[in-house]
Image 1 (cartoon, helix red, strand yellow):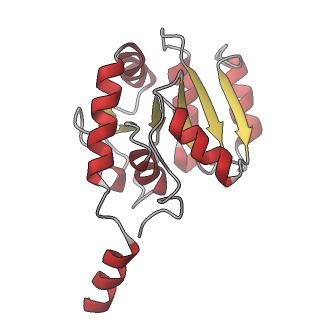
Image 2 (tube, helix red, strand yellow; image 1 turned 135 degrees about the horizontal axis):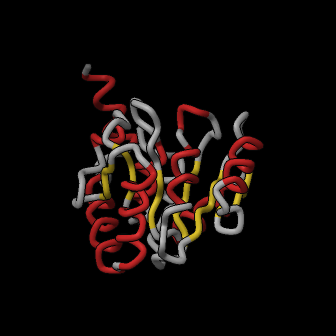
Length: 184
């Protein structure tokens, strides 16, 4: 099914932050983003939008890695703020452990933003193809940081991947989902 934000999401400038939007729990591996930010050389920030049981631990991890000034925990954001965050992001980080679908990828693509993920993210990889719609990395901070730096330094790459991602999800509509369910 499509994201409930499908009609609201739109492209915007490729900004100076990487966005994570979702639950703050271990399965989403936000700690991997934080550890990666400690190795990112570009002046890029991370905005982490969402709530969950790991927030305090993740804030502590950001301080421990010395990136608390570059990692902003936005907490719960309303729909309008979320749409704006997607529109202004450089890219979206979404690297859960073997997740089956994940709206964050589809939402990122509706905003024409590339997705940075890992080779073990599961269903995310049905949408994110390395160097086609995003960047797929080993689930290690050094490898992710290199990809984040690459996107930060290359506006054309971010735009090319984001545009390709946008085209990839155009057919994800309620009409098509209902038709598939009824005919199944």
